[in-house]
Picture 1 (cartoon, rainbow, N blue to C red):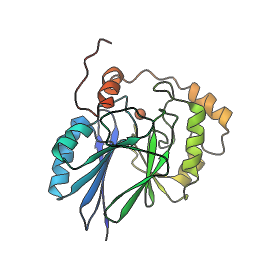
Picture 2 (tube, helix red, strand yellow):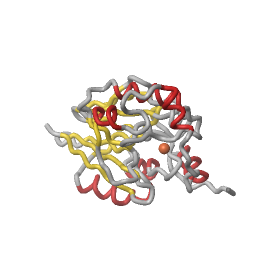
Picture 3 (cartoon, rainbow, N blue to C red):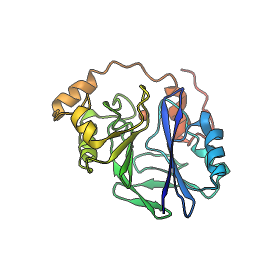
Picture 4 (tube, rainbow, N blue to C red):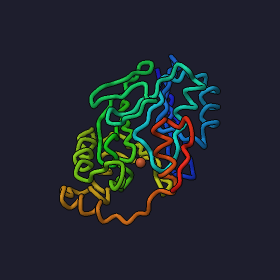
Length: 236
Ligand SMILES: [Fe+2]
C-alpha cells in the first residue's frame, strides 16, 4: 500500500495543484486544479490509470479559474467538493468541518479555516495538510474580499497549529518557489503569525498588507462560483 502524490504547478498564478491516489485501488483526488493546466492534469491522471473520485477546492479562488467542471466532464464519476460556506450549485458535496472522505485506504479530513474567504477549508491527509490560502509558507492569505476576516483567520490558523508539528504544509500558492513547509516551521518562522504573535497584532499585520486586487478577480470569482464551467462576461 502506498500513496501516489504529485504536486503540480501553474506558473501564471503560482498555484499548486495536488494529485493524490491510492496506488493499489487507483482511486484519486485532485486539489485546486487550474484551467490553464487541465490538459496536463488530465494526461497525468490517464497515464497513471487513476480513477478520479473527488475534485476538491480549498476555496473560491480570485486569481485563477478552476478546472473543476472540465475535469468532471472528463471523469464523469468524480464529485466536486467545496466547504459548506460556499453557495455554489456546481458542488456535489459541501463538506462540513470535521467530516471526512476517503479514496482507497486513505482518509481526507476537513478542517474549516475561514478568514481568507469565509468558505475556506483545509484538508488533512495523513501527515500532510493542504492549507489553501489560509496558511502560506511564511505568510497567510489576504482578508480584504470574499467576506474575509483577519480575526477569523487567526483562529483558523490556531487550529492548523494544533496539528502535529511534523505535519507537512502544502499551500495553494507560493510566489517564491518554495514547495513545502511544516507546522513546526510555520509556528516558529511565519512572518505574520509565527513566534507567538497575538490576535490583535496579527489583525494589525493583515490589515497593513498593501496589495492590489488580483488581475483576474472579476472573472475568476464568478467563473469559480460555477466551478469553471464557463468564463463569465464582465465589464470591470
Ligand atoms: Fe485565494
